[in-house]
Image (tube, rainbow, N blue to C red; front, side, top):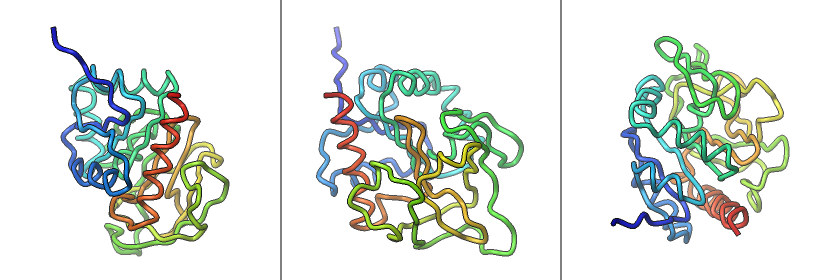
Length: 213
């Protein structure tokens, strides 16, 4: 009989890219107990979960549903397991995505994933400073106004403004980071955001360790 391992942090492989760069980001941050997996049994045992992604909301939502990973993510989040969505992964935390239609998200951070407004360059690519309107463990030790690297055309508009823990601007102010209990999301790429991004990944790993202790 095979034995299912219990990783510290599982990075969800749902065929939407940038998995290995996130894994390498954790390694650079000094976090070694990380695995990339599409196995629901591994996700069901992981102490923390990261949902990364690059691409279209519609395809990502369909992949999660068809693979059975959607139900696992919702179950683990309900159990209090720390979950971090990165870029497209943060967008999937919303209730609905409005990219080429209307698609169901995970609803872990209620709100809508909407296109950035006209009048500015789309996609938004580059370094932007992020302000922290309220404290979050995710940004412990990171200076307010630090810069992070973004690549996206859509943004999350939380139904509850208090879910926003990071704000930046590209045409309009928008949520660069969100939080709802044990669920976190960042629109930027921490794995590409130099020391501040690595600090954020370390902070998430610390949250995972404390919750699972």
